Length: 156
Image (cartoon, rainbow, N blue to C red; front, top):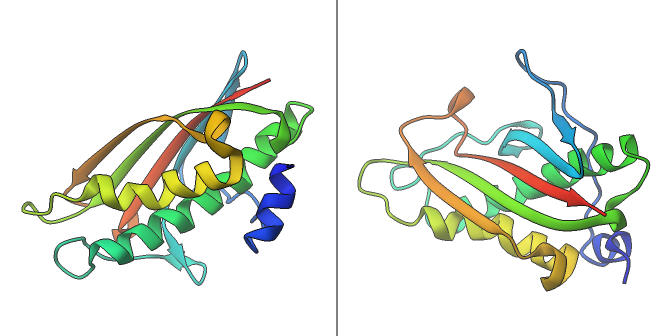
């Protein structure tokens, strides 16, 4: 099944690429790899502010990570188009790196990150969507966002 059919079945519309807030690019391609810059969680178009273990629970963090995954898919789509293909041309999601804004006693960063990883698996299937991953707890993120995630993908 096409990635686009899966997105439609999941009732997901790809957002446009966000304009960078500083001196960086939303994505860079090197060879067959596409590196997506970190995307912060957004809710209703605004930074999804919060700190896991203080003002947010793990389920809310997972929802935020899923929202980030949708934004990453929008940027990945733009990167694919720039490379002359589309999301069906993604050969592999290689790596996800997740930063979770949390207090110093919070230990469920890996569960928060599952919100992103599980959606990527649903959209691309286990052969393409399964990926290496790192999940870190951090003291703060830009604009007070609760989660920031970056992604590396391989194009076919």
